[in-house]
Length: 148
Image (cartoon, rainbow, N blue to C red; front, side, top):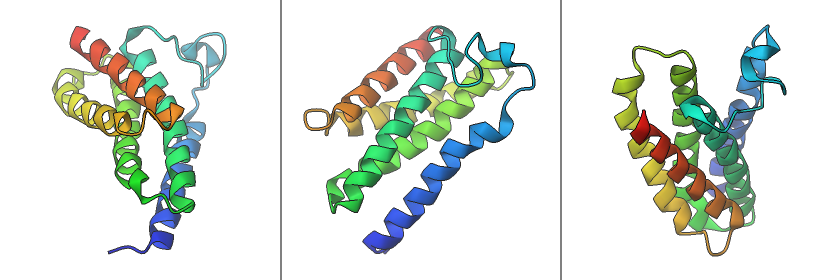
């Protein structure tokens, strides 16, 4: 079993990797992502919605880590589920943007991960606004996946 310090250290490293990763793979042509560069999402279409969901998830994960650092162990499961959701939605955004042949077979996995994250975040939604935002983002992404 990990100590609280080890958990926080590992989650911090994981969050840093998730936040820095997209910076390492920016496209050469900024028009591939609209007028605002690589971090702007259209908000419509599966790729944009999944990217937006991952971005909100990063904020939620950061909040979870802050709460864990303060000793709030109730955020542990939320941090784990949002970490998985960020990974899943980042991949989903890439598959959808590329119109990948693997998109349809990936959707069931991503739906499960987003649904689990939504449920976990809803447990904290009354006390943490970012958890409510993350749950809402997961719901929007689930709706977009149903339409895909």
